[in-house]
Image 1: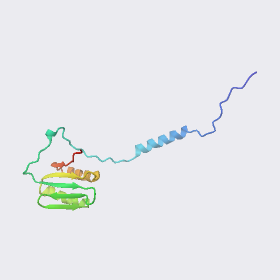
Image 2: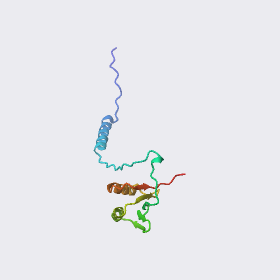
Image 3: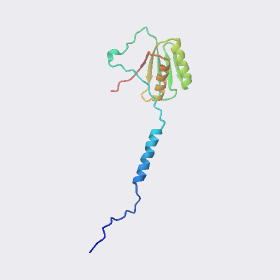
Image 4: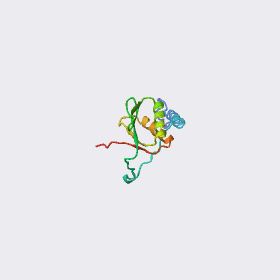
Length: 142
């Protein structure tokens, strides 16, 4: 007796392969067209501790503190006192004036929980002004 060939049971569920293909294409398209602006700032780090500059007593210096809470920027000038700045433009103007009046050694003292955005703004400003005599104070973690 001749029997008809067996047919496989029909799958009544939806076919997901074309849907997965379309989702993949859309994800790739969105990744390629996303306009993400990456901000970076090159930093020269000494390769050994023998290359670290040493402070001399004759150098005048002032300190810029980057704080986590407002006011975010503090300028402390030896003999002149401390100035607090909440507004970036006010701080920027005061710092540029100080850098142009009396070039000195600048110590940058960021608080450990301060926003990195504030520190990067400061470093970018120093880079724009071509000020190279700045040092970042860091604490040792024990």
